[in-house]
Length: 219
Image (cartoon, rainbow, N blue to C red; front, side, top):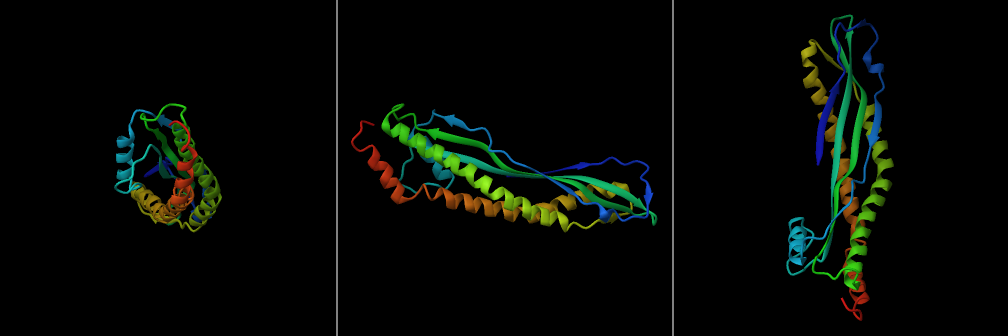
């Protein structure tokens, strides 16, 4: 999920400057969140299985008693500065770039078919909570790299020159879309890393181990 937005600095009677606004160094503000975890106990195994299949997590013939889901969300915001040049042109340059990259709507589904506090219930709960913890740990690990790469993108920003101030909206859109085009592959890389880390929990070997834990316990 991505949302692009921009904040325009208002300018009336722009000062006439000889200096190039390219000397402005955009400030990066990186924001992130794990999202607020919620639990859903209202669905049976069939309902949870259907959600899993829609997400492409489960193959046909496999049923799920639990599921952990989350949306990876990111946004780009730009606070633009503008200066009128001696030649009459307007120099446009980002002053502040706000990036959000994190999670929204983290949800743990636990089947209502399971007996609360029974072995299988507690096992499924721990499994899905571990998925959520993997999400958080992977995000913490990735953010320093993400920030470093975004800073490189911002440092490459060049000033844009326009004739009329009514061009500012379209120029700002271009700046944001340019940032977004370079940031999106970084977000996709994070998603791939997230899937890889989750596979350390969702694999046949671990499934077999977890299934053995409740074999001699009333479920």
